[in-house]
Image (cartoon, rainbow, N blue to C red; front, side):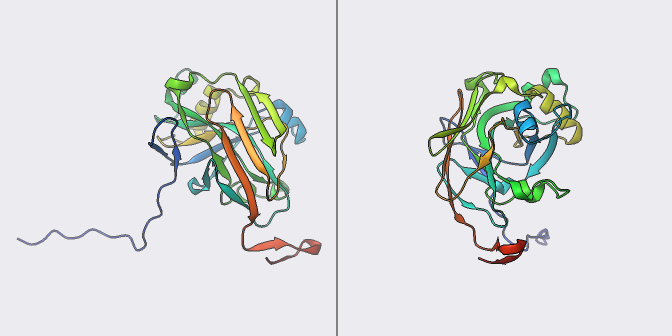
Length: 247
């Protein structure tokens, strides 16, 4: 009997699939896609000079942008204005397309605290949002708390401190687009799948951080997130007159 033909192989070894810790267990949450919602708290929309009547916008980060709590993240290249944005994160446990609002929260497996780190000086001006939002280590995230333990996250304090000083302090009840609306609307654009996570928008108080700064992000009822900003990543940095030079 002839041996079965071998199938096509991978020409390089695949990278490990990024994952997030789960509160109270050694299990991990495998990340498929990272979706983000922009402009979803009135005060933040106003501080950024945008119209609160506009709907929020969606964008993505790469899955390997995940950084665990307790880590030191490198100050990214090609920016002089790195900003923090604390957000509630949804972990999607059941997928779907065109999910109705009434069933949307049935698709949520758990919640976490996350940071949407942003190269603010590269955002806007007609530039794609990816260059400002989707860089390496741009998604620090705390452990996921299952919904059976957290209950519905319709309200609760969301807060961020930098070196012990409060920078962002708000409440989840102030979200413009509520969680069922976010899941339903996003699922009209993309078929959600288990392993997807959704950042739901940041409140007011965003601002710059630099090397040595310690960030602590908390949401009532969830595991806290702590990260430190390290030195600039190797590569290119801005010089005088807007030119670029090797660091």
